[in-house]
Length: 165
Ligand SMILES: [Zn+2]
Image 1 (cartoon, rainbow, N blue to C red):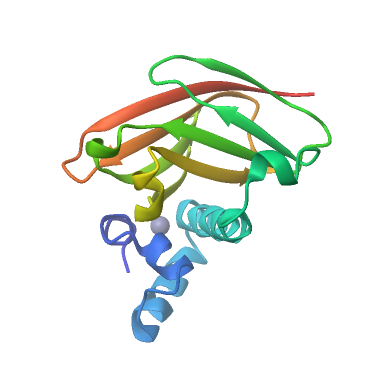
Image 2 (cartoon, rainbow, N blue to C red):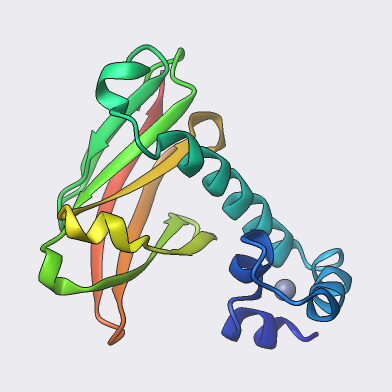
């Protein structure tokens, strides 16, 4: 499998979420063992999935207060985010109007490194915010950007600056 093909077919996302047929998964594995970019995306989506499973059905604000830092992002406005040393996870709450139709959410660093692109669960759209949970120690200090992408390809940018304390 070529890198472009992997990107266009969202191979990392389908592979990490178990939506890829075994023979295609074999081809993709052969590719990403030698491709740093795809290997990173698989790693990030796997982390994201594991964290997302923990979030489902719980009120994060009340349960894991010492370990989870909740950050509310603002459209087109750089939000300073100080990550406390005790925080294991960061939960980003992204306000979006339900009618906007967010389809995917992606995270990129200032260096332009794409961390992951994930489908937005439909259940999240109904409540008017998209929640992204990531491992705090995986975040790069400095400028980061979460982007929501609609089914029509429109984008909303939610920038923030990470400081590790
Ligand atoms: Zn690749």
